[in-house]
Image 1 (cartoon, rainbow, N blue to C red):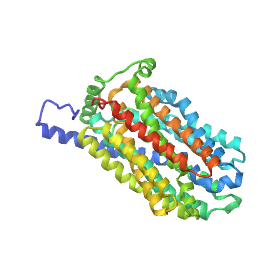
Image 2: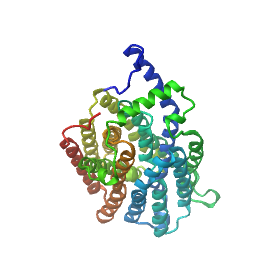
Image 3: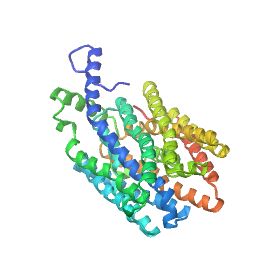
Image 4: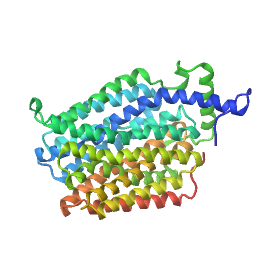
Length: 436
């Protein structure tokens, strides 16, 4: 369905062409910066997976200590997610996103000074508090500029940053660990946290000056272009539910969507936090080589994400696209476990898994953003994202406990596969995709 409301003059084809040009202009203005911001955010969130290759031995952390520290980030994230998103809706996206990025950059850099498990837990928790609201804030921010029929493509372009962070971050992290270890008396993992925090700091300052809060403030659009976007968004908002927090959280579909997202995120962070360790266990020991090998699944993930999102938007169908992508992710994990002794087959499994997970992310978000508007969107999106991201706490920790107990990650990966398959069943049980 095309949500563009035609002006009184002109033929439909001409109207669509004009609208296409307007939204293309908006996308070129906003998406590149948001894309770079999310690369920086995701890198600061998961680079602890690469730091583990040196940090764990240096600080004598067990796998369960590492897993708990990696995951406790999401407890702080969960607690402050909804308040942060509500504040973004009230005070404006530009300033709030800038505040988020600067504070998380400082805390991410501070991780280089960790010397104990308690310090590791504390800085990771505070990092989650600082970053809370960033991702759902961006999802909400896109609803201010793109109607639902055009938002799927914009969201998928933004979310490819997760995979690009893996493509760029893997080799960069591996190079830092390999080349800077011992420089100025600091270990490679300390340089990793310091250097990878700098882009977030710079982008946060840029976001303060660059991101307008609303369409009406966008002086880079003509008055006619602002009116077209405002008309489209207003027409869409009139068909969405808007209400209190209690009303949104009393919606059964919101809870089901939160569970489905939990299963997708379980796979995402299970892979993100443990991929370097899994590759090392296959016999790839040099950090630089680990970095380059880890980029392969994410590169395929970018391609799969774009193709699946494009097909879903073309068909206006998101339920089956989410389910099939989740099942592919589960199958990939099982392949990696079954053939863990064969580097090529195990990497093929992890690549299939990453392709499935990355494909599920953008098509999933096409549902909640289409049925919730205004304050309800701020609350609902933040709630779904915060519940889903509790998987980021639970899964690294559980996998760490399993690895300490069994000296293998196989059972942990099998658990992730089962959870993702269950998520696929639940999303299919919804029977119909959310209306667009």
